[in-house]
Image (cartoon, rainbow, N blue to C red; front, side, top):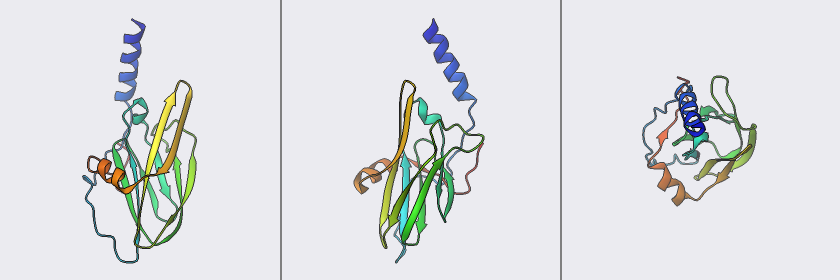
Length: 152
């Protein structure tokens, strides 16, 4: 009986959550503009934590929401970028804010994955570089979150 009540409570909690709906459509591989770089960050999700939505800030380029089963894409000038992952008021994100530095090389795409996991009271999140083949396999099922997508 306790399990059933717990499942009902979690279901009601998640049903009332504020969310962000990606509007950029499914992934389409595009040609990189000559002399530019691209940063793609994807998020698989697939657990209770997948209801959490962080804000991803790319210093000097703007910030995006990253719901589960979505990705963001930023076309940038080559150089060093600081990427921040943090909570925005109105959205749930149970993890401590963190950031990483990446170097975007000329005429290259950087593929990063936001990985989250939770065991009991211990929850962690990290951004990790992934191989192009892995990223392209996952991206074909994900919706793109645009800079203009907002909290609903």
